[in-house]
Amino acid sequence: MRLENKVIIITGSTTGIGKAIALRCAQEGARIVLHGLEEEWGQEVLDLLGNDRAVLHIEDISREGAAGRLVEVAITKFGQLDAVVNNAAMVASSNIQTTDTKFLERIFAVNTIAPFNLIKAALPYLEMQRGAVLNIGSVNAYSGEPNLFAYSISKGALMTMTRNLGDTLFRENGVRVNQVNPGWVLTETEIQRKKTHGLADDWYKDLPSVYAPAGRILKPSEIAAAAVYWLADESGPVSGQVMDLEQYPFIGRNPPKDTSTIKTSK
Image 1 (cartoon, one colour):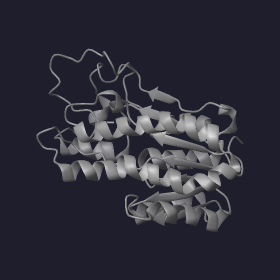
Image 2 (cartoon, one colour; image 1 turned 90 degrees about the vertical axis):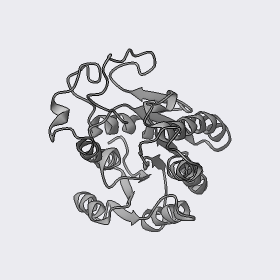
Image 3 (cartoon, one colour; image 1 turned 135 degrees about the vertical axis):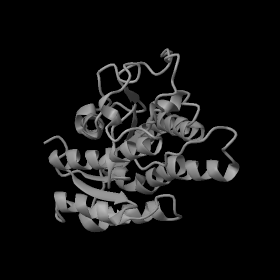
């Protein structure tokens, strides 16, 4: 198994991409520190993995001291820490007119500052194991959609942090830092979000080809499959890299003349 005996913290792992990563990593032999805001959902994931293979911590990751408490849970339960997956994120629509300082600070607190805090808190233990950090970004990091202004720039900052720490932490601490940028993924929350936009319950079954050349959008399990490579020893000395996971080039993609039928988010 590719992650046998590794201990991995995965933020935002009670649902969506984080949950898929947790399940896949456990299948590969890892022990998991689950984290999220939804205790009921988290308990469901914990039940799937078992108390001997996982532990659940419920807390807003942006709260002061949350990163240290999450690391403490890992060390107390399993005695080591091999990897961190910064997956938790706040996705909220905004543009320059609707974004004020308070809103921007809140987005950055969850999407950028919290990952920084967790990396810093985990670093002494990751260094012991010559471990890894995997940041879950978004293809929106490159420029972003008009209605995802604050979210997009927070993911751009996360990507720069990955590039920077991927060099410095590997050189100085032996800890690899990499990132995957998912495109449009069919998570539970994304299904519900599109319903609030007025789309049909099965909107994802009939998507314009410009958004889904494959006839469908990505599954969380497909992001999880890619995540395992970056967390496993088989990725070797590779650090500071960003991999885009989307079915078409995000930059330079020609949008349809009428984009009013659907609003995408990553």
